[in-house]
Structure formats: structure tokens, C-alpha cells
Image (cartoon, rainbow, N blue to C red; front, side, top):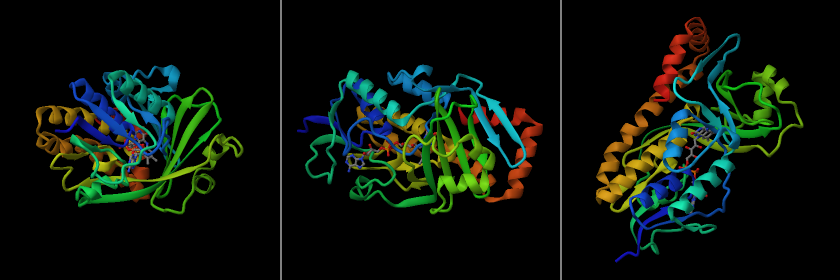
Length: 338
Ligand SMILES: Cc1cc2nc3c(=O)[nH]c(=O)nc-3n(C[C@H](O)[C@H](O)[C@H](O)COP(=O)(O)OP(=O)(O)OC[C@H]3O[C@@H](n4cnc5c(N)ncnc54)[C@H](O)[C@@H]3O)c2cc1C
């Protein structure tokens, strides 16, 4: 008889959200992570209003004072820019480490047990009713479970860096270049997070700023970097299945959404809620069925936006159309942050 109800591999946002949700259903939960908090990760560090309210539901309070509130999204094209405000609520730019600590504290309050600095190397010694594999996009647990068959995948390359520069904007800004985008998220009164995403593995942030975004380069002077640049892979990835026996994949381990959508964390919070319900009901098929439905909207939005990445003509046409009719952009944002 297992003495743990849920063993979570990976204490990132997804694993911690699932741990909290499962504890709230009265389950005994242990989270193991190879690292120690606060755990950093390359991320655009923007939480849309929907992510923020889901965090609140998990007991993770994120007032503007822990980061920097932003009111909407602004696109910068080559010659035009267009902005839209969120219709309900305000987003927040928050350092990944700050978000991680807030999640860990909420999980501790909920009664989750932790094993930090404890990488899991197989399922062999895990004696639990359910195993949740939330070990990120490069998940090894996914392989051990035999769940690494991919339905569709598109991958891009990302670099993230922070700059000690006072935010010049209260929007999350996306700068569109040729085959790449740079996202700027204000994360504090004196700091912005800058993430480059492109199809070229070798394109680094500094080079992209010089080549494609000279006006932005001026705003981010050399010498204002506050930490080293960190790289990651992003993309829309769908798997054939996300459960097997008593094992469920969660968050990026279960497939991902391209960073352009800024919705990865939100999606993992939604998945965590459904997974906890499924485990409490003793039926992982509830989660298996819900998983593609939850990913559908953010992945569709990311795919739509990536059309602009593929074709410069479409990009400048779309930018002009949105600039001429900003209400369309507002509507799209409303759908995106449903
Ligand atoms: C460039 C970029 C920008 C992004 N911007 C945004 C954004 O602005 N907003 C947003 O919502 N999302 C964004 N995302 C997506 C978001 O970062 C991810 O969706 C989110 O981090 C997924 O969380 P996770 O818990 O599934 O995985 P992770 O955050 O990767 O956590 C996995 C955890 O598992 C642990 N682990 C791994 N292997 C083991 C093991 N064997 N044993 C124990 N522990 C293990 C790791 O230490 C880690 O703590 C972005 C992603 C990228 C790449």
C-alpha cells in the first residue's frame, strides 16, 4: 500500500501547481526536484491577467509590488506599432525566481512535502498512488513512461537576459524582426526582462539587437545587463498521450506552447487543476481527454502569430491592418487571455 498519494517529479510552476491542487483535495503530496529554490529558467516573465488570477486561486498572491504591472500588449513592427489593453485585469512582469518562491511558499502552506536537490533517476523507488512527471520540456520521465511519441512539434531557440533599465512602457512589448522576435517585459521599477526567440540556434540577443532592433539596442545599453544570458528551446509540441497507468505528464513535460503566446505557465496551472480532479476521482482518463482541449486555444494563437514570423509581407500587412483598426487587436487579445 503506497504511503504517498502523489509523487511529483519537478518543482517548477507546473509541479508546484499540481502539488497545491492535489493537497487541496486532501492528498498526501511529495515534490522532488534536482535543484533548490529559487529555481530560475529562461522565460519572458510575463503573466497575463488569466495566469495571475489562476495563481491567486492557488493561494499565490502576486501584488504589483513583487514585479511590475502591465496593462496590455504592444507589437512593434518595422514601421508601425499597435497596442491593446487587457479587458479584464492587469498582467504582471515578475522575475522567475520571485514567482518560484511565491509558489513554493504557497505549497508549503498547503502542506506539500519537498525533496530539494534530489534528482529522480527512475520510477523504481517511487511508492505512490500517482506519479506526476513535471520535469520540463526535456523530460526524462516522459521517456521512462514510454510517452515520448510526438503528434506535432515546431521548435525555436530562445535567449533571455535582464537589463538594469527603468521600464519605458507599461505594456509587454513584442518587437517583430525578420525571423525573430524580442519580448520586453518590465519586471521591476529598475529592470526589464528581454527574451529573443528565433529559428536560428546561433542567433544571440546581442547580435539580434544590433542587426534587427537598433532602436531597442539604444534603450538597452551595453553594460546594463544584470545577469548572464540564458538559452532555452521553445515551440508548439503535442504528444500522442499524456498518461499511462498511474503516471501523468504535466506542464512542458506534457507538450508545450511557443513562447510567443506567453501562456505556458497559465496552461500548466489549468492542467494542474484538472489533473488534481482526475487523481481525486481515481481516473486519469479525465485528464487525458481534457489535455488537448486545454492546449488548443494557446497553441492556435501561437500558430496564428507565427504566421507573421514566416512571412515579412504578411507581417507588415497585418501590422498596418491592426494599426488602422486597433479594435481587432483588442478583440484578439480578449480571446487570447480568455
Ligand atoms: C524564452 C521563453 C519565454 C517564455 N515566456 C513565458 C511567459 O512570458 N509567460 C508564460 O506564462 N510562459 C512563458 N514561457 C513558458 C514557461 O516558461 C513554461 O511553460 C514553464 O516554465 C513550464 O513549467 P514546468 O514546471 O512545466 O517546467 P520547468 O519550469 O522547466 O520546471 C521543471 C522542473 O523540473 C526539475 N527537474 C527536471 N528533471 C528532473 C528530475 N529528473 N528530477 C527532479 N527534478 C527534475 C527542474 O529542476 C525544474 O525545476 C516561456 C518559455 C520560454 C522558453
